[in-house]
Every structure is written in C-alpha cells, then in structure tokens.
Image (cartoon, rainbow, N blue to C red; front, side, top):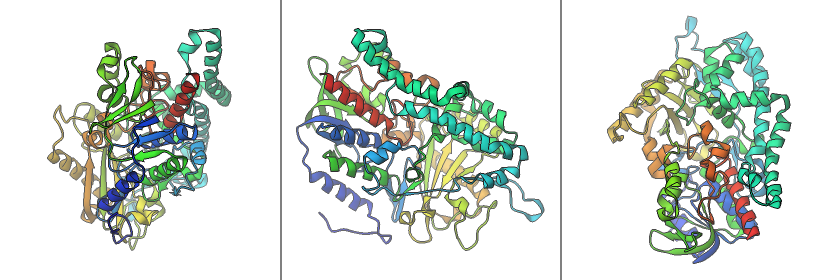
Length: 576
C-alpha cells in the first residue's frame, strides 16, 4: 500500500481513498463462484448482502465505481471539502436494520438536527426588523410561537397536524418491512400454496388495525394533492409552502397534483430511533462504510471497480451468475440487482430471455426527475437577513434544512410549470443544508460544505442536452437567489459541483436522474413498483432479483428494499 497522505483536516484525499478501496478489495480475491452475487454497492445492495450472508449464503458485492455507497456516498470534490454528493440526510433507515447489522458498532455516528426546518421570507423588514422566518423542530411550544407570527389559528392546529401525520405514518410501517401481497399465489395454485400466500396479507391487516378509524384519512393523503390536505388544516400560505416542499422534493410534481400527499407521507415517516435521523459523520458515505463493515464481518466479499456487463443465463432461462466487462465470469445460484429496473432489464439482462411485452412495459416506467444537486465549498458561513448571526458563528437555524424560494405555493407551482414546459425554473425551489455546522470533519476550519437540492429542472432543456454553459448559467441563477436571502454568499464560494439530471444518471446510474430509482407516483407504488409483474422482487428470469429503490417500498435511504429482497431470495432457495 502506498504511504498515507492526509489533508490538513485529517481526511483522506481522493487518491488515497481509491488506494484504500483497491487495497481492501485486494485482501479478498474475487472467487469464480458464489451462492449469491449482488450487482451494485449502494446501501440496499449492502443490506441485502449482509442478510443473505447471515442467512448462510456466501455472497459477493460488485460495485462499478471506486467507492461504495451508490447515491449514499461521500466524495472529496475539492481539497479538504467532503460532500454527501448525492443523498445528504439520513432519516428513513429502518430501525431493525440499524440494530441487526450493529451499525453503531461498525462506526455509524449521526448528528441530530433540532430544529430541523428553517424558512426565511424574501421581504423587507418592518421598522428596521429583519425579514420574517419560520423555524420548526421537536419543541411544539417553539413551533407554535413561530407559526403564531403568521397565524394564531395555524399555531393551535399544528400539533394536531403533526400527531395526525405520525398516526398515518404508523400505518405504513408494517407495509415497509414485507413484500407486497402475493396476488398470484392467493388466486391460483394448490390450496397449500394459497394458504401460504394468504400470509402476505398480514402486513395490510396490521396496517388496518393500526390506522383504525383513520383508514379514510390514510386513503385521502395517499391519493390526494397535498394542497387539499394542507388547506384543511392551515390558512397561512407561507406555512403551507414550507410543508409542501416535502411533498415534491425529488418528484416532478406540484403541490396541486394528486399523489403529492403520499410523497410527503413518505418523507415524514422516518424512524423514531434518534441514532438514524440527521447528518452522518463523515457524510453519507459513513453509513455505507458501516454497512460494508457489517457485511464483511459476516463474511461478505465486497469489491469496487468491478463493472458488471451482463447477467449470465443458462439454457433453461435461469440466472447462473454474471460476467464483468473485462470478461471475468462469476457463477452464482442467484443474482440480485441494486441497479434501477431499467438498467437491470435493458442493459444487464440478455434481451432474448425477456418477452417483447415485458420490455415494452419496462420502457414505460416513469423516471422523470426535476432534481439538480449543487455542492458548494464556501470559506464563510452563510448569514441570512432573516436571522443574522455575528462573528461567523452558526445559529440553530444553520443546522436545519433551509427552504429558499418557498415563500408561497404559487412560487412552487410556477417553478413546476416552467420545468414541465422544458425549461429550468427561473425562480427555483432551493433546499439548502450545511452539515459541516454539526460535523467538523467535512471542511477546513472556518469553511463549510453547502449542499443545494434544487427544483425544478428538466432532463433536457427545450429538448436539447445540457451543456456545461447551461449548468454554469443555471448555477449562477441559483446563487443569485441565495444571495438575496444571504448577502455575501457568492463571494464566499471557493468551488461548486453541479449535477443536473443527466449527470446523476451518468455518475450514479440513476435512470433519468431520478433519485428514487423511479417516480413515486401512485401507479408505481406497492403492487405497481416497478411493474405489477415484478413487484415481489422476482424478475421474469428465474434466480434474478431486484433489491434497489426501484422496487417496494421505494426511494430514500431506508434499506427496506434490500431487506425484503434478501428474505424473498432465502425463502425461494428453501423451496428448491
């Protein structure tokens, strides 16, 4: 191994990280045969591998890039600045995965955020006072005081609204940790098989028992536009705009579109285990490294820079392993793909073994993305007009998700319509986080990493590919808007990394740039995710399974798809 070279913050440089990665892989030689092979070292692939190995299957993970984690990765883009370059905040990780895989033991540390939401208004202060803002956290008394600045009626209603969402979220949890209902098994086959399939109804039964009289409310929020729900609870347009951001983030939809209610519920249903909510120390790659260490401790072989070219299929039409792009063949009883369904079935699976009807259905999966990520290195903490601080010292609001250009729902709707018509929004919806406020390992002293999740941007600009000039111009516009809320921001920038939807697709394999591996629309949830015929993680090719966010229960760093897929695989192998 080459001599260690440290940055001045004690963090590894990119070149050394790559060396470590290759060194770690080289300590375990790639075998020609395994019982299970997982394509992709994203968090779901690592979760699946760990559980398969714990279940007694010798398992290997093959990651295309030089670094593990998929979208949950840390990268040193500028010297000394370490970014959660794609996924940025941990909130949905399933508690049993955290416990089962002993992630704390394997190095996972999470910085809690409280308060967690800060929304400044772009307005002139009254009589010399700063512009108004809204800060929300776990302290309901503080929340009511903050909301009372805009509506006393809304302040009174807010705790009941939070309790209402928590109750609806509890109803979802039984559905997350189990495959969808086995409709085919219930409706066909022998009596014994039907009785076994009936057991897959139990999560729905538990969901119904948990919800009780709130079943109609659950149905409403899953199917309705979030504005219908928010209008029932609140009057303040500013409060509604702030809450509506969780209903559209990562989704090419508006608060007025049906299904946006579920997107909000999906984002707020996070784990109540505090150790799994917040900024991961060292960035989101810290989670992936903890998962990898746990998987290795059980015996999983994990390799980076192993680019799978195709799934091997035998003469009977069953998966029998993979072949790398360098020609190396690896035999295995089963293959799990952590790639998107599109990549799995269009790029990795031999087309001759899939029916034309199935390929047509795969082509119709919606991967529309509105999402652009801008990672910014700054030498000074942003100072907001609405909540100024002195001496470059962070205030409580700096640890929050900071909502810019969410002054009203109309602003969000206008931004959405511009993207639907093929153009990046002129006044984009911006979600800013500054994780280095809580985690000093991410940036040099006095400097910070600022992560901007920006909507709405189309995959193509008026039908044309993004150019470098397009990205720079769009980033300039975003920075101009940030500057209005936090003067001096542009001058503090020492580097920026712009990832438009095509960049997210190219670098991270996110088809269409969609961060959820497929839109979280009503037709692509539960029994329809990613398609009705493959909603149980099994593909048309025997022995080939999906384990990524493109299958139930969908996107977000939760690990549930990997867990469910692993259980499905082990159940199938027991029946052989």
